[in-house]
Image 1 (cartoon, rainbow, N blue to C red):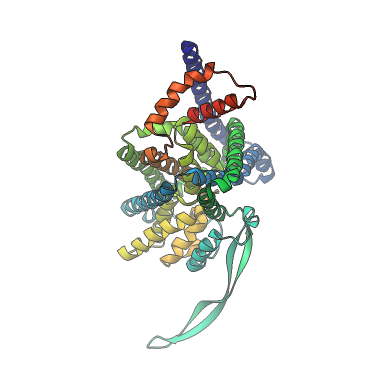
Image 2: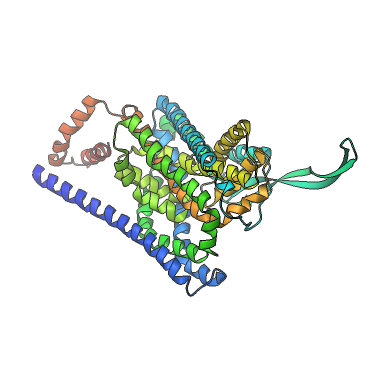
Length: 506
């Protein structure tokens, strides 16, 4: 009987590995076909054929819709069940360790980006760069207050589809000053009014904060709130099953998302001639951070091979590249962490959603590089104090960036304003930002995953609810469970199955 069970277990494991690798192959093929399809269709379509591109993007829109549909139930159920079932002494330590990891890796990414852009100086070289759009005005203080305000939404239902944003009205004022020889008239902008407006889009940060407090409260109440814990655990299990269904559709969606983007590029040759060195600087920083620094941190903390861990996350990384959204990738990230890398569900349920909300290594690096690049384009050399301001502001702005496509472009304005750079010059990098967004999102997901792996290793003993002696007893009972018969009312069988299921998960 034992040999038959071992044989079945090996066959099932082999089937799982085959299916997982097959899906990864499909995703890689989808990326290659999508790029080829995009450049092939450029011979027949032009970027101005917006209707055709709109229809081409339809399968990709479906993928994004399905992934975004799962974000709300997944984030809420994951964080609540993780904190509600975590040991009270470990919950605070896990949260503190996660925040320390996020802040450290984000600051490292910013410093790396600054070193590269100051060394390479892409803004002082190459052809003249053309503006490609318009920028939105940004106010650093208002943005900071909005970040804090959205942590505490007034209505938890409303936060599922909207968030608050400060709208400031400006008035132009002419001021005349005497410069020593004659009067000079200068134009100033004065803030005359400010109000809170509702902006469409899920307030993920508010949902995360609410879920953290809700889960901790369930943990504190214990048996009195056990039914709530069971409800959210069931919800989480159902959502993860739906995630696996969506994963099999993802190669098709990714293929069409990429194809539509490449068809929509106005002039790839001209764009890369103008922004090639800037693009190379950002990509170099992302590769160094994602392929060297993060793996070294993982190896130093766990003494395990980081590249095996990252290979097991390949589905999530490719999905992040294809969708350019770490929030949309969250369901697949959690699936890969638990099923492929053996990360404790408790750690994955807490670290991954919080990481997708506030841990943006790739975005922080990009913002630091872009800000100094724009300064270089304007012939401005930032001094050491201004570079420090860029690093701190980029770190803070990245934490507030939403996990949606091109969210970093919005928070970039905060960094530019902090060092007095013209915010309208953010349009200089718009033409290529959509492509860089995909690479930095992939790095964001890698950073979240590495963090979950490290914290899982650090808290591996704390998270175990059974002592070694209890585990030995469970192993001895496993074979007995197969031969015991249920009693007349079936209670014994139910208890055995419940215990066996718990032991299997552990």
